[in-house]
Image (cartoon, rainbow, N blue to C red; front, top):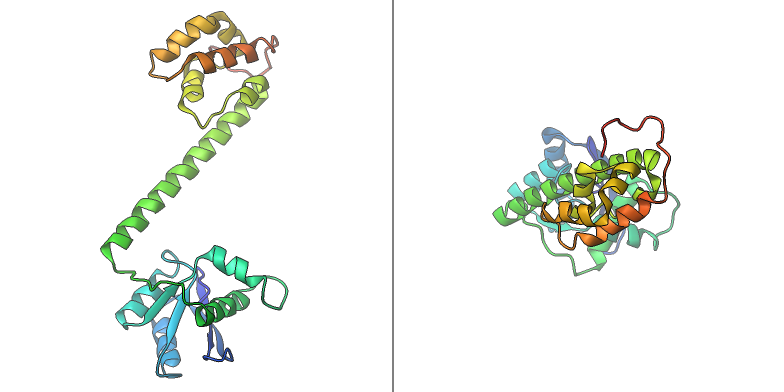
Length: 225
């Protein structure tokens, strides 16, 4: 099954690799239940393989689990790498579903999924939350760097904003003039007072960048440090 938001695409093959079915199935309980029954009627033993462990195929996974079906998980990166070995151009849901089905047929290193395992559910929640936080932080830093590039590009180039020290520095001082007035020694003490480890390095870097720019860019906020 190649998973999607509104539809999933399924390709069924036999043990020899011959295609038995290729169908686009709406992501709704009645349609999925009917489809599961159709597939189960095709053989005595069925193995299902999906490319997502949660999210969009959540209902499908729950239905398969409730029907005691053997379920394998194939990460998307594995599908993408394996696709290079199959004929045909372009990426389509049907082609991806065929790759998933064939890889599940020939490989023995995919572990069974247990979507109702409490540890698995908790891990999905935690990793999902962490992903959201990482994305939010990345967006915030990108906006910050965009603003800083417009008024103080030397500082943007000099500091690494994935570290806490540079971010704390910008809370108090953002302009070349303000940083020059502080100087390395005072800025080091200011950062140390806020718990920054090895504060002299970002302080000296910021002062060095400030020495490279003595022009105030129009639009720079008044009152910035």
